[in-house]
Amino acid sequence: MKAKAMQKGQSGKLRIGDDWNAITVIALSQQSPLKAVAELVENSIDAHASRIIITRGKEKGAHYLRITDNGDGIPKDGNGLPDFQYVATHICDSIKRRLKSEDREGVQGEFGIGLLSFWTLGEGMTMASAGTDGRTYEMRMGKGEPRYTLAERKRLFPEKGTEVLVYPLLPGIRNLSGEKIQWYLASELRDRMKRTGVTIQVIDRQARTSQTVVPREFSGRLLHRLPSVQSEFGEVYLELYLDDAGPENHTGLYRHGTRVVEDIATLDAFQHAPWTSGCLQGIIDAPFLNLTPGTRTGILHDGRFQALYRALEPAEAALVRMIEEQKRAAEEQASKDILRSIHRAFKEALLALPVEEYDWFEIQEGRHEAKPLRKESGAALQDQPAGTDVAAGTEADKPQREFFNYPGPLYRASISPTTCNVRVGKSRNFRAVARDRNGRLVEDDLIFEWAIMEGPGRLSETAAEIVSFQALQEPGLTRLRAVVRQGEIEREAEALITVTEELLPETAKMSGSRQGLPAYTFDHRPGELWRSRFDETRNLIIINNAHRDFVYAARGRMLKLRYICRLYVKELVYKNFPGLSADQLLERMVELSVYTEEHLK
Image (cartoon, rainbow, N blue to C red; front, side, top):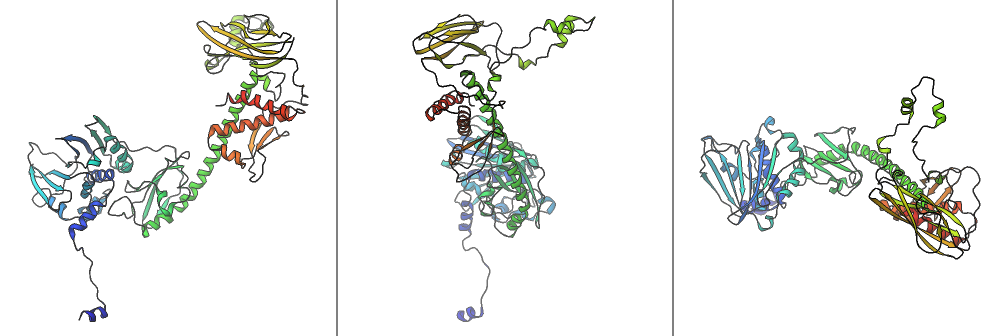
């Protein structure tokens, strides 16, 4: 008979062979303790709680976790008592699924397995809620135990809402600090908290801290003009922020305000730009997605998921364009910052180098800033119209100096030039330069003191801003010191003078007007070995950004800055010292690099 039935075709209905084994599998499928806490908190939010308190503490030598709220409590049975029996006997059949559509709005639970997540946290759970009779009742459940018990809790006054106590906590959960819970809930329930306005407080009695969970705020620029994302199952909400690329940036996938996937790029279907760019933060909320019941941290890759994938395609294209625009703008700004740093470094370096040897590209024009005008000249006063109050007119006509243009107190001193070569028997001038913390020239109330610390030579005077050094008839290395004082502030500076019998041959001066320090641009030439070139007609240094050295240096800002600075040194020395031998050019490059890279920042 059985064989005949098989031949005709036999059908039937699937059912669970061992109910308790199925419950055990479901309860142990939740692997994240923090997600388990979030499940219990979401039950409170579904019960319309406006305030939730999570308390972590220790009692009678055992750790516990208590979650209390002021929500609606456990649904009541026909006698007005908390219907704990229904909760315990309807696993995978949540009462929330049978709510009316208007009551279902904003409710996350649907599987009836949220309470079982306590297995991930502790050995036992007690749930308490008040009935309409003014009494408080509780249900106790144990991990790995198929039975539950109901009892009345003796309290003088019943409290609104529900209390869930997990006690004792598992050994590996005892270090679950209140701060970790706060940070996790701030991301996991960010949108639900914003929509419902619920206040969540985490009290850690062991650490003696109390923290309020604040919905996580994203960094970067909020993107407003994104295409509307519509699917056949409903609208998808996008809140995305564009930030600088970084490993901490990712976009979460949410359902009804609760995060179900921390980084959408971890899903195979979304492992492409813009989600893998590392430039986006924010949320994608698709309320129509189906979740994996066991963990509630994943989604089913069904037709609804495919609808989300198709609906996001126009937004993806727009995001890729925005990211490319930001990258171009960031590169332009970085180039401006690098150029500004290099120009400043060269000006500081040339202040320390001999003017006659490095007098090119109009850099020397700014070496000695003009002193501010202190008095109106007599000629200027003679041009005043008759009857004008000279004193008043003078004050009115003085150029107004902004507050930040006034130098501060003395901060550092230097000697210009800091290093030079002087032929035996010749002389040259040196100047002590005083600056404040921001690099502005300090000129008031200064006292100078010069001295030769080591080596041959004489000074014309020792108490002036500018002194003349007279080299003797024998070569040597002279160390010159200047002490600058302003009140009680004292700063020292040194210069090294090489007294030599023979100087490097003079180079021919460039013809035509000097153009100032050049700018730079990039030229992508993969496979070509040149690193940089100088375009004299445009006063521009062209850098091959496809060269392996540039690719290596572009890993960090300072490494890239030093690399471009050395290209500047190479091009400027090669251009401005024509006729020198290879070894002399290398000497110049080393000298200029040393004094320039000191000021890079």
